[in-house]
Amino acid sequence: MHGECDICNTNERKYRCKTCYIHYCSVTCYKKHQEQPCVAPKPDPAPETASTQEDCVTKKILLFSTVDTVPAEKLELLGQSESLKNLLYNPHLRQLLTEIDSARDGMNAIKVAMMEPLFVEFADECLRLVEPEVDETRDDLNELVFTNRQHRR
Image 1 (tube, rainbow, N blue to C red):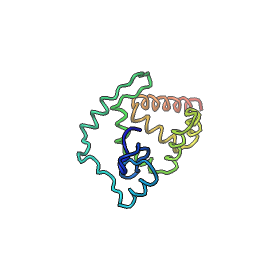
Image 2 (image 1 turned 30 degrees about the horizontal axis):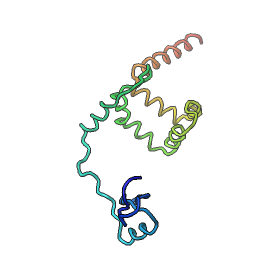
Image 3 (image 1 turned 180 degrees about the horizontal axis):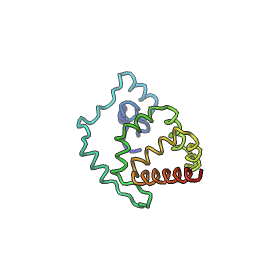
C-alpha cells in the first residue's frame, strides 16, 4: 500500500471504505470517517455504446484456438436467443449451470447434468444456435434411424 491516510494525512493507508473508496489507516480514522454520511462515487456518465461493445469483442484475441473454438459472432447468437432466455428463467437450470461452473471436474459435472432433461434441452438449444449444420445432420441421422427401424418391422 502506498500513500497516506485520507483522514489523518499522516499514517500509511491500510484500508479502504467499501462505499466511497476513501483510504484510511486505523479504526480511529474509520470512526471519524463514519461521522459523516458516506457517498459512493458517481459512475462514468458516458454510457457504453453498441460500437464500444463490438470493439471489445473484436479486440479479444484467442491465443490457443482449437477445432472446438466457437467464433465470437456465433457466441453472440446465444445472447440474442429468446428461447435460451426463456429457458434461463428456470431457477433449477440456473442452479445446474452454477454448479457446473464451480465444479472442480467440469466434464464430470456436465455428464451428471446431462441426466437432467432440462439441461439437455438447454444444451441442444445452444448447439442448434452455434452449430446449425450439425443439428441438420443430427436430424437427418435420426430420420435415417427411424426409417431403418420401420423397414425392419
